[in-house]
Image (cartoon, rainbow, N blue to C red; front, side, top):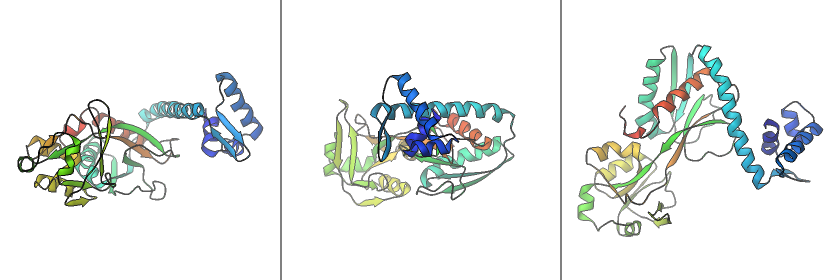
Length: 296
């Protein structure tokens, strides 16, 4: 599986063989034997290199998952015997970091008194290796890379507006009604001024929106929404307190808006340090279920 994955990732038998300290003929032989065993062609071979077939791409994804789980199982035995300490360098986005990660990190430090944490906030994707980051929290689907990653949970979003705004504006019953409303645009996600919905019947809808405020800061969008300036799409972890205290009301609740996957990302899936594995296990316990409803 490791050999096949490296062939897919490098697009070359020779490069994969070099990475795994074997020869190109051996690499070719093993992949051919794997194809015979499975009874399918996994790779298309041509003069420019190799690339996976449709079945080969699916098999690659499954191999990647299996090998990560095996590595985590191997790490667990060593983790239970290892001392967790030193400095853990964490990177996260500004809003998620301030509202979610800060209280969680403080709780983790209380449970691990020997641990020091360097917590940095940045809405841009940082280079983990160049900046010496041990673990980053990232939203959305991950691009394929050599980084290690662990799925932590789901980050759901909602459409909301203040009671005052809804009382003085046109009815908002279906997404198409947004054309008559002031929409507050979070530019880091809704950068194309179109909001995506799925109807109760499963129909995908793409609705053009416009309004008085556009910002790449979720706190600014939330403040404007609470002030009655318009309708906003917000993560539940940002909006839940405002919904709980009545400052915001969910709208269009029968139409779902896209959620985001939440991942812990670290420099390499191999030889994951004990401090990183420990923190990931802690996060998984904290980000289960409707985690956004729980207070700090």
